[in-house]
Image (cartoon, rainbow, N blue to C red; front, side):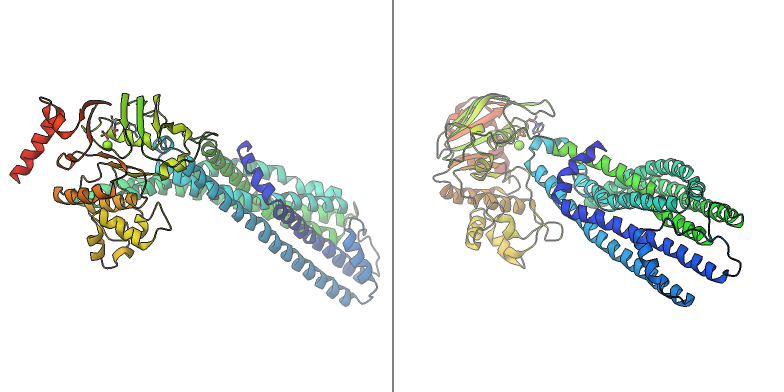
Length: 610
Ligand code: ADP
Ligand code: MG
């Protein structure tokens, strides 16, 4: 329950709606409890009229609500029995209408409020996700993140809407009807309410079983979804390895588990409503039997009307009381979900703007001073006492074995992580003193693993600059050497890519992703092995065009191919997180048995055979 306190700010935000909603619930129940009183009046009145000859006790007129007394006073002026019955019945109808009207308003306020809260909360969680750093996303599975924004938020919604409504409803129905029952007859109230504690105990036990079982169902369902999702996205692998059968078997094991749980839940639930009905039935029976005995024996002023009145009260309590279990589990689930949401909402990103961070134009002077960096989640030290100084406008190539720390350099320059020791400066300002958004906006980065959105080619390219003109998009595509291919698509730049669009080759994806970086036209550009899926000839062309584009920019190009490196100011070879060779192509070729010289010779020979 304590976790739900986090919702306080939303309730405060929508306090007018909430307050009005509670008032409407109470009003609707108030009009509801008036009708049994009128029924008592009609029945007693008729009974009285019919038994005038042998006058007997037909109950007092005590215990009526103030409004009912008014109505009775007004009706009493009429003397015709038939008329009184008709008018009183019409008033009962009017009460029902009033009750429904306020019920309508209560849904309009409370349920509508819960939808507003749901909207706000979804946005709050999404915004939090966006503010968190890489480490967070490394530590949590995507499915988990998705669940929280979808499943958990809607469970909380069930609390802020229906559950609150049921709770207010339950409290006001019980309070109002018990109040008027006591006004009418204390003795009868006592007998009628005896089964209630038993009911509450049964509801409590059955409900906690139901709750446990539905949690298990939820888990099974979640496994089932993950299972299905994975087999759809991996369908090509499944088919080519002819594993359809075994995937199906695996799926069946999961559905079987789901079925077992669901059946067992249905069986428990089957007890629930009949048990409640039985106990309500017993209450009704008590009313009729004990009330009847009192009536026959002229005890406690019980009239026929009182008995009818009590039967209606008991029935009025049926729904709210039977919803106790449901409401309790709604609250439990919402509390568990809100707990999970709070866990995320309370996380502070490690990488964030300091108060003094400034927004500066980046020229492209890069300094790594004795940088050591260990990935916090794996404990792998990717860079060790790493030093690299790049002048403005310099073109640097970085090469080296897989895992030597090349991509880490790019990650750290974008400040996806904070360094552990040493420091990184950009234009002689420590990275930590630059605004994150400003820093990242001014660096064009093409990541090693391409990611394109399910959107048009054009929108994918202008992703970083949403208002970029079409000409700028085309120009970026031209430099990246992908313009001809895009124009060849049926819908040109409007072609959809991704799941429901065209399937692109690895090389095409890489070049669109390059175009997306180029359109930003920044002072510093980092390419992380982003031409690996492009053939050597295309790479050469792109590099030719890029040279012009890069003229006044600082560029860091990470690559495994060496031919295209010939024009670089400096080539760096990394090994286990530090520089092992550094210099121009000619200088590196001089190093006997050097990594670069061997790589060059190997690739030279390789193309020689082609
Ligand atoms: P390269 O780009 O040269 O192949 P990386 O910089 O990607 O090398 O990786 C350097 C080392 O850091 C590798 O041992 C790799 O396993 C590890 N590493 C890379 N990225 C991560 C990460 N996000 N979390 C944990 N370890 C990582
Ligand atoms: Mg890499």
